[in-house]
Image (cartoon, rainbow, N blue to C red; front, side, top):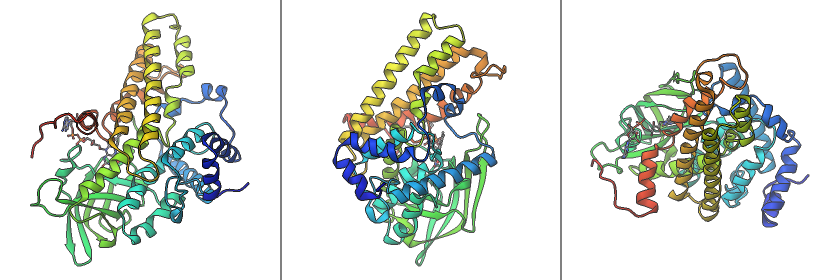
Length: 416
Ligand SMILES: Cc1cc2nc3c(=O)[nH]c(=O)nc-3n(C[C@H](O)[C@H](O)[C@H](O)COP(=O)(O)OP(=O)(O)OC[C@H]3O[C@@H](n4cnc5c(N)ncnc54)[C@H](O)[C@@H]3O)c2cc1C
């Protein structure tokens, strides 16, 4: 079978149906299609919104993800919207979206642990990186050799990244970084981190920070896990003590780090809205939710039935609205507009509604393991849904963005 960028470009030119068929045929060679029955009886693993792995499971999952990513890279499928010289196929982004939907239909390794690199940091390097940064990181990220993380949030700066205190001090061609980052997803298995650091302490907000690519194995990088209430430890504190970064690995202009970070956040919201790397369509599977109602003897309960139908409608509306927005914006490798942020907001709202529904159906069985199959795993969704409202921009911040940048409403008052 022919593969490579030209092959996928020809299929894309022939239309989404041909492209979908070609991708299905390719992926089908590496894993069977998941049948409806498989999906119904499958373990409820996919309802955990944030990874809850033991170190051994995590190591195995990363190895499998890297292996599958390498296969996709060799076939020209690892970065469909990216530039050909770096392993891309220069297709409109909607083909990435099609690819992810097809991939979810097959039993192939999850690539969730690679997503921050492939969907957020990689595209940012492509937009703002020097030639040296592109050469060092782009192919490894898309080949599965380099995993990336986002070193944005700090104890005193989350929504308001203009307030970061981690300092980067220039020393000739080098920068010396000092400070603390927090909530860094996947830092413990990452090879490179995209860090926003203050470079001009006295300059006005949004013009005082720059972005650097930090080699996570550098001397001076200390990573400490943070255990979340669901049990896993996906997040970390990252301490930077005299960490040296060459100026080649600065992204964008000095003191223009806010613009670079905003680019990454837009890529992040687009990827969350589109459900890349996560079976979020599966989390909302209606067959399984109907089965849950039946198993609990509640299929005739009018309130729960209504709740489920409302959820179904909202999930479908969000899916269609996101697909429509994705079709209109962010073609090629362009930075997505704020429109797709609404998809992230809809998704976190729907996770919240799903958590409410499941809690109403299962009651205490979602809070304590009674041994009854198919019940307790939902606790991971119930506890994880709240985190989803915060990660990648809180609901309130996204509402502000939609109000101001999509609807053109007056700006919210802000501390200056
Ligand atoms: C699952 C998860 C994964 C994460 N992964 C990462 C990661 O990989 N890298 C990373 O750097 N960070 C990560 N974070 C951190 C995340 O980006 C921040 O938690 C988030 O930006 C909010 O910042 P904060 O926690 O400091 O809350 P704050 O910014 O202090 O917000 C507190 C509350 O005030 C509200 N608020 C703040 N400003 C405004 C405003 N202007 N208008 C209206 N309301 C406002 C917020 O909505 C929120 O309800 C992750 C968080 C979670 C939950």
